[in-house]
Image 1 (cartoon, rainbow, N blue to C red):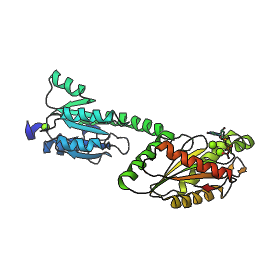
Image 2: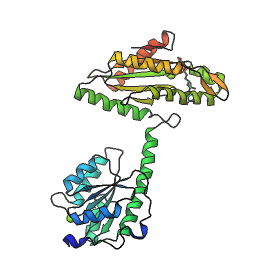
Image 3: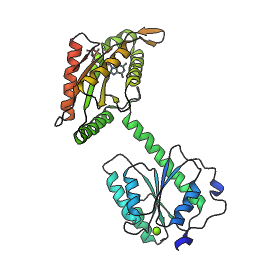
Image 4: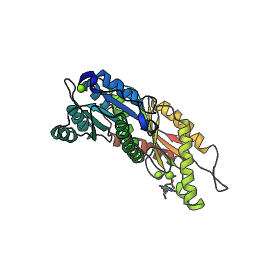
Length: 316
Ligand code: GH3
Ligand code: MG
Ligand code: MG
Ligand code: MG
């Protein structure tokens, strides 16, 4: 087969040249044959899908394990690490994450045994060389649809629907990641627990829908004061957890002061009502050996001090 394994088709992109892929999709083409790679690149160029290439199994695996590819076309026959092994290792890694890559095996082998082996190793689909560009386009399209659903589900699993912030699980995951980074790189890390003051009274006075609007607006005001690397999530009902990488205790207190003042700066408007709102903050600095629970407990204790001091306050 060699260079002839891929014939440049008439009118590349063919009848399905007008196919629209979901936005922001990334495609990996892993094949040791340069002309196959070029042929596939041509099919998908200027089609609204970003294409990366790999010429060895090792390279393919490196790209795939970063989890940044949506659909991968993986050649069956590559020297050293072949396609079956690439997919097998990818699937192994994916078991301990919430990521998934849609994999299409490219093969010249079309005996049942080889296809069974490819699919059993974790491929979602296969194409047989020499393939028809329209056929390949449609199979990739089908893969991007699966990945779009996966993206939506992943987003929903990590975000709070009311405020659009990270949810409790996702913000704790970020906290764990930043704690590990701080241990590794020795940088400062602080966290803050923030809680809206007398929120029950807001619900009781103005109604639950007004309370929801206050939650959304407070989330927006906090978000507007965050630095690029800061993260905020909805930790509980009207409680938020802030992760502040690089911030010493003093930095974190100053940051929270800015947020506190932004939250209380003006009333929240809802249905012609003006609802005054304030929040209290408890700040804690991470030191190695602390667990997530211990760190959050320290922030919680500081929050209690802020509440006890009369609320609308920051304490460490
Ligand atoms: P404190 O200043 O001590 O924090 O008083 P508080 O009233 O804010 O604290 P408490 O924990 O007693 O009340 C929290 C209230 O938040 C109770 C609960 O009904 C309300 N809440 C929790 N989640 C939501 C939500 O999603 N929407 C609305 N509207 N209310 C919520
Ligand atoms: Mg090959
Ligand atoms: Mg409260
Ligand atoms: Mg509370």
